[in-house]
Length: 136
Ligand SMILES: [Zn+2]
Image (cartoon, rainbow, N blue to C red; front, top):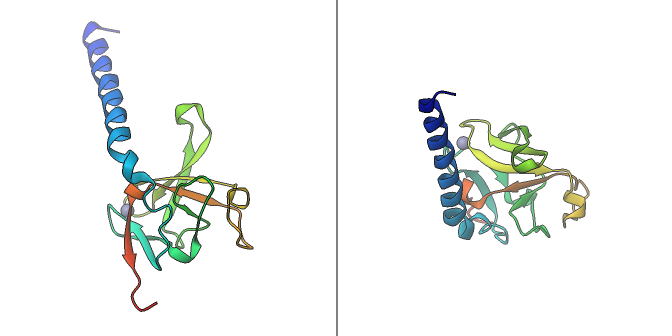
């Protein structure tokens, strides 16, 4: 590697470290804030406002993260995520590609008592904007 390339790589990885540190400080208080939120309505993408999850598909998970057993049809896409040495499935908004969280196949083991319990969409509160459904 040329000295110039080395310094660019160092600068980029330093920026990554700073960004990760910053994100963990800034998002931590908010990231689970919808976990016990049970009002009727729709959880939309905070970035583009596409409806992503419905309150009736939300369950109170033992993981204490906002958890949904399914998404609004075709509202999310998934892709493999092997970051941090873990094999996970990342969930992204199908409209704007915003990172939403991850999906796990352990809904029936983490507190979902619904007959269709299987999937757990573990979603960052900070990625969501809640729209209250009036009159219910
Ligand atoms: Zn979006």
